[in-house]
Image (tube, rainbow, N blue to C red):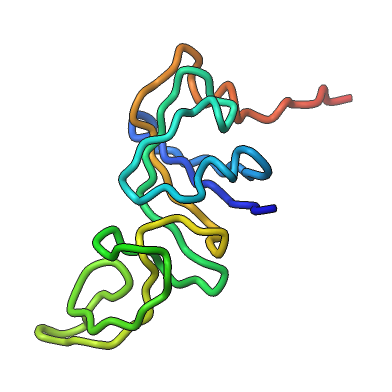
Length: 132
């Protein structure tokens, strides 16, 4: 089965949270595209909705929103995801992935679009042990 690391960004607090998605939670992401919203109940976040903003595969190659499909391609880039030019007019051929989430992905970036009743910090806070 597929395993993903979901990096969930909270625009209200400016914090990011890591979620390890396995089984059905990971399966809910397969076949979705960058920019699509997913119900947060899949990740255990009741009342939340999250939007996929990007991702990378097992070799660190980023996904581009404007590239259809899920395969890896070598494109001549002048700016944007996957390439940041050093000097004006620089172009370079780089490997990038399509916008569709496939089992080859390792990390998926997402942002909170709709908030639930409980704040995100309550879902992710670590229980502190009593000092003896």
